[in-house]
Length: 508
Image (cartoon, rainbow, N blue to C red):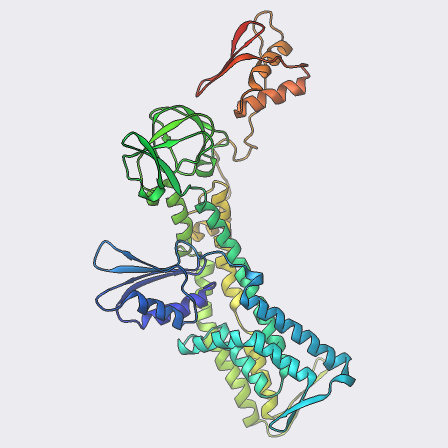
């Protein structure tokens, strides 16, 4: 389910199931959240309705709600990744493209070898025709099948238009047109799937920030358990290099925590007892014991993900216009195509010639000419790219912003930013690089600037802290010479470092 028309098709199918009380469809995530009354229907009926719209249910689950209703979800929080270019649909598309290419070679270049190989209802089939029909079978059948489901669910969408055009063109012997249409539309569908999958990749990256497992302290022992099984009030252990599994408060230990994925802080933040930490942040240095203050599904990161996923519910004015437009546009196109095919043959008895700007146009009244023109109108007037472009752009923009520490609550706010004249920023690293640097060196007493830098850099060469990197960079830039090798080095978590140089103890 990759576009609004796909979601509309599924929604219409679900509406016909007695017992479904609510259905929320998100084509950008490829998921459907369905609420139903278990006394009137079942999960199997929900899945059957979705499959009846032409879509496969992957990873569906049945979860107890707060009331007597149950929920069946199509997939988890987001549709699983797909290999767009090597999928069965893609392979059929490439096969159809090969048939079309060979058919065109026989049709226009190898005309001498394009002999008749069969006859159907006294209609001769040449080699090129057989190849074009092969392309229709390979690339066109999936389109026609989707069109069938659209007709079944009374949904006038692009699948129905294209399926009708392919069948009609094949039926009147326009094999080149039918094959080309089937292949090109299949390629367009693959590009649409690819664009949507890229948007979903951004959501998956957000979800992967939080670890799946946590090390909990239970009865004085460390136990590795799934993060969602840890309750509020329990204590989890976070070692250097580990991601913090759940939101909580530090009760023991000191460390520097990289929480840039959550808060956008440009440098690690020192944490001691009483400080809050967030799921998905990285513990860089010390040992921490954290008392959990929220479950996995209610963490700050989970709320960020939920906000991004639900952003499509807050549609931009452009999206609302597109939805209204497509609702009227597609039926209008179908009516115009029917009128184009049916009316002129009834009213034009003899060919009519018209000169426009020096060009001559002849309108004949035969049925075949106007039938083809009606089909052409169906094909060129499909609004799919127009309908999908805005939602994909909104989701891609919001997820990309979230990965870079900017939270946008919905597409309507994203669109409103186009009217912003001034922006105020109050966090380090939003406009700057977010990299620490030494701006001034102020020696005290008889100590020279180079000597101070040399000793400080000698201590910091053993540290992994961002401040250490800044001091070392300044020492290298100043050319202070060989750095001393300290002894008795010790990292004072949350405070600094200590070591001995030439028998004297230094702190940084």
